[in-house]
Image (tube, rainbow, N blue to C red; front, side, top):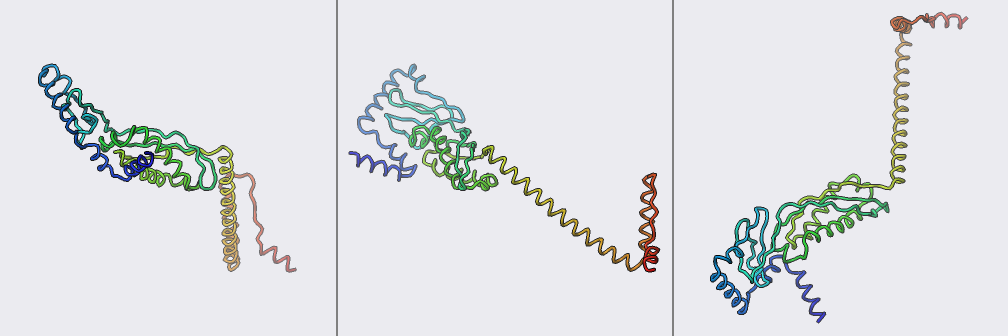
Amino acid sequence: MEMEDQMESQKRRGMSKDELISERTGSLGCVGWFLVILSGIFTALLFPITIWFCLKIVQEYERAVIFRLGRITDRKAKGPGIFFVMPCTDSFVKVDLRTVSFDIPPQEILTKDSVTVSVDGVVYFRVSDPIASVANVSNADSSTRLLAQTTLRNVLGTKNLAELLSDREGIAHNMQSNLDDATDNWGIKVERVEIKDVKLPHQLQRAMAAEAEATREARAKVIAAEGEMNASRALKEASLVIAESPSGLQLRYLQTLSTIAAEKNSTIIFPLPMDIISHFMKK
């Protein structure tokens, strides 16, 4: 008996969404049709009263899945507007087609490089097939929420910390694709998945901040050293130009005096020409 149940379960998992619905929309049988006809006669005899029990209304954003003696009457849901049900034999389930959003609770995840992070997100989904969402899964909303948590953990477990912080859009797209494929037989369409926040341990935050600060300081020292090197090269080239024309150095002295005098300083520096000093040094 258990072997037969397992085989039947495996067979159902291998069937497509349309095949599962077709299996549930079979014939009512002789007894079923007899009860339906009896219900119709009862409705006709008590027409003024039963009309209030037979007519149902669903909103524009809702659909009704009708069960007649436990079987789905049609492969298409009823609505929106008014539809007719048979008393005693028919029952229906309302399905909301509007987009639903929910927050994925923060999940403690161990990344590929053995770093523990807390990640949460948000998922937007809607019911694309009302009959499949009622007939193929017990609670489509709850099942999608639980599957989203598991998918978040599975997807992020294959990423390292750098990818997790820099490639949120790619991770969200991967999650959406996995969720959409898994919930297709449930009549659910996952429209969007977003990673809201990635919380790192405080010790790791301090370590990353120290690393970033050290990197910036090292880059600043390299830039300063390159600036000094370029400045020394420029000074060397300037000295070679001035050496070719000794009067250029004197003009540079005068320009410096003009700059100092323009600042209204009380101290004035008179440069001593290098030619005079060199003349005494030779003697």
